[in-house]
Image 1 (tube, rainbow, N blue to C red):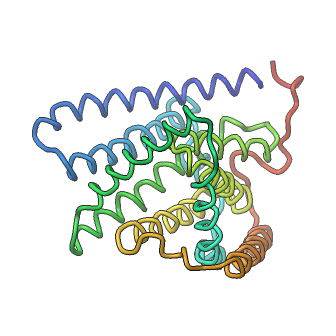
Image 2: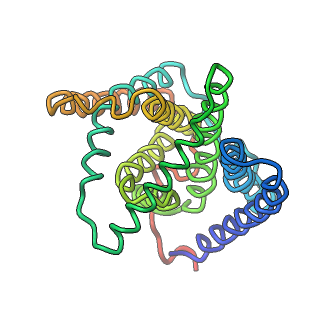
Length: 285
């Protein structure tokens, strides 16, 4: 890879590390005052704001010397595209749930399988604690944190700043690698493949629409469904059979094509990596 990538990536990690230090220093005194559900919510907000959102902003402004608009949003998104993205996330639910269920039964090497099982149980306990909030206020907090906040922070970091590091590279390899890093950072073995595919798909929404905001919307909807499923009716889609999953896949392809066509018809700018960007090992030392 070009030296430019490693320099950009290094400074993005530096800003993320600084955010992590700030969060740890803030959590230490707070931990003496609270615990349980509230503490987990504060940690999650810290991760979203200080490890994802703030580093992406500081990296853009202080290191890249660019405006937020240049990296995060260079093209207006039509309401038709937004509606299609909402439809996409709805029709994809059976297929994504089927994939997640299938991945849970994949055989893993013994050391990895033991770690994955223990990690999944620990994460489930943390999620159960976080979902302890009830009532309208509890739902609002959970949606703000787990849907809107998480989607905004992760999209700005991965499909905004990190994707910008790959400028000048083959856009398809960039999409795959950004999706890979997005999945790896979650440290979840059984959800690795579905999250990788989602992360890669969100990159293509950036390519097609010229903005991270469609990805933020899709990400938030995906997380909202996961929140509803975990809190109200676990495994809501388990009863759907192969036919429903097959229809879901077909509809996904159709809606993706409609999003691509609509985005190209309204194209007026580019973001991050344009369709003309490609690998050129000799162009930059």
